[in-house]
Image (cartoon, rainbow, N blue to C red; front, side, top):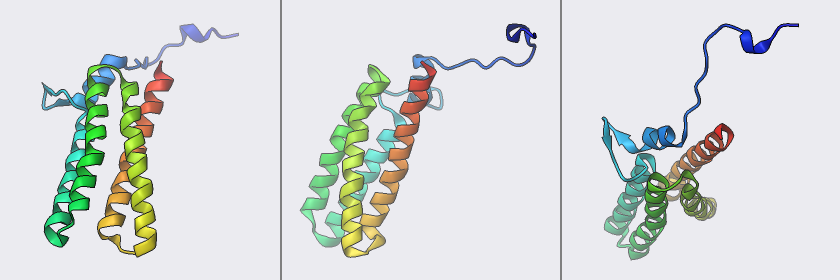
Length: 139
């Protein structure tokens, strides 16, 4: 029988919690207090809410986009500062946004803005789930 421990070949080194946090919180070598992907998503939501306000005069779009961006930013900050499991707050807010905008898209059949926000929310939701699963299975 061959001993598996003595097999020569490349070794795979798993990332620890600090390496994972650094991967999502550094930009061109500069450390940031936020998860950058979450920050970009929150900015996207606020910009779309502002566009909705400017185009249609919808105060609800502006308030809703800021209201959903706040828990995403809080979860992003706590995820970067404390522990990656704080991204569950971001995950819950994004899931809520995805469900709401998907229902709105289904009812109106308009791709802009409900379909766009639902699609981007789905991509971001997939990113969050993948990141949590990668972190969980690397423990």
